[in-house]
Length: 85
Image (cartoon, rainbow, N blue to C red; front, side, top):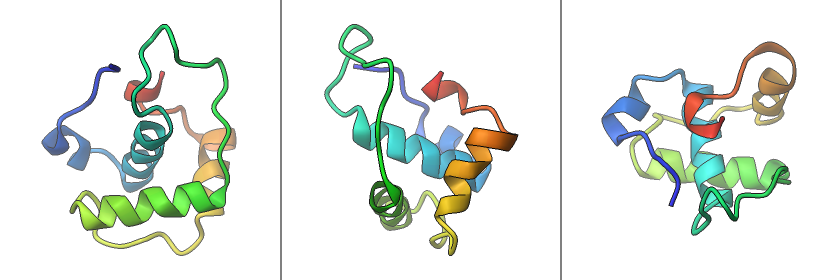
């Protein structure tokens, strides 16, 4: 099992970080550090599903309208959240 931030700690992060962590948790569910692949592939449907789960769990208040901007943010402007490093 991978280390996880508590829900309270998660709520303190920027919204995109919370969504990115939810996506990471969804895609790595059941993995360990030893079984974690070097690359994890996903598409916009995965991002949208992670957003819906985060809304349902009360981690974010509503979905981001431009889901593609989340991927672009981490590709070009921001480092990944610590939980994902």
